[in-house]
Amino acid sequence: MSRSAHPAGPRHADVLTEGHYTAPAADLNVLDEKVWSRTVTRDADGALTVGGIGVARLAEEFGTPAYFLDESDFRARCRAWSEAFGPDADVFYAGKAFLSRAVVRWLQEEGLHLDVCSGGELTTALDAGMPAERIAFHGNNKTVAEIERAVEAGVGRIVLDSFQEIVRVAHIARSHGVRQRVQIRVTVGVEAHTHEFIATAHEDQKFGIALADGQAAEAVRRALGLDSLELIGIHSHIGSQIFDMAGFEVSARRVVQLLAEVRDEHGVELPEIDLGGGLGIAYTSEDDPREPHEIAKALSDIVTRECESAGLRTPRISVEPGRAIVGPTAFTLYEVGTIKPLEGLRTYVSVDGGMSDNIRTALYDAEYSVALVSRTSDAEPMLVRVVGKHCESGDIVVKDAFLPADLAPGDLIAVPATGAYCRSMASNYNHALRPPVVAVRDGEARVIVRRETEEDLLRLDVG
Ligand SMILES: *Cc1c(COP(=O)(O)O)cnc(C)c1O
Image (cartoon, rainbow, N blue to C red; front, side):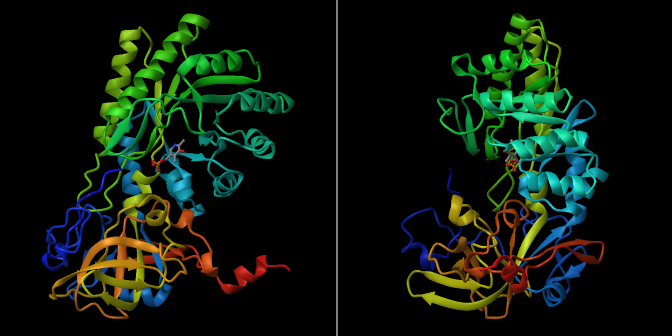
């Protein structure tokens, strides 16, 4: 994973031995539109507004910490993806990034499909009225009960992840008297994260069936031999927060190679390929994500070229962006509680949430930005670490960032780009109450996932 150079004030530069710290590039009052959702701006008084509503009002009405999701930005991103890929491709939103009934309805209205990977996600999707044929069911260890529900519901595809699962799904489909549409997930020997990809020996992980040693070809052979399965294509997902298209290129080439082998061996041209998700977003000003139309063009060019050279009809492409749709659409709003300057090091700013609402920093060393949003300030920048209130020194939300030196308890600060993998990975550590998700659009704010209460906690405790 690459470390991006984070800004640091000159007076701190001598004490920081790792990273490349430079003075803050921009005025701290300026909100970089790369990392904030589309309708975010500052009002005349300097307070951040989203969807036309100021953060002071949002904090008063919904409390902190809370996630505020810019609904028009979410919808615009859905449309950008589906327009970029056009009528000959399908865009599946990866529900694990963040899923709620409201999100499912937006996806439906914007014409997207949906990936789920558990019974809980499937229930949410069906409950909100997503047509089953637009749902894909993923996972490396789906339970028999989950497969039964998916088959009964009539999901559009189940993505098979192991040899056992081929037989398991075939058996369940047969006992329900249906022919289940399936894809086989292969591992192409490419793993991509952030700015790099590694094209060797990354079969050493739990997902999929390796192309190497003819394993995937054997899986195709078995699936084609089972009447209750309709094998519609091959699936490959190579990683997450990827900026470089080279990994997708290798992946597409290897998947098309398999399609050619399948044609040669079985006389069958599988009609679909799914290239997965993983497209990166800007968490800090140094990240430069690609636009959906660039990604769509790059992927379809690769697939078309490879298919032409293999003499195959171009299959229908699908992609599965999660983070790239929902990630940039939300920010987490916190209230500053305590401020602890550590002489010669940095200042620790404690907020009213932490690793229970954003585990990514602790889990992946993820980088985030932060801004003072309840007001502007002309004070000097100070190097801060934004930490939570949990009993863990690794409870860090933003590792290195700048905030104005006059920051005070009671100020509101916000961390942008927390729409993906924050609420969906939130926990009750220290019996924290998981924060609400509030959708904001055109001057209206409404709760789409409510804040947990202490009653919610006690309800589960039946001892
Ligand atoms: C996680 C996942 C995605 C989505 O990944 P993002 O990085 O959020 O785009 C898509 N497909 C599969 C199979 C996944 O496991």
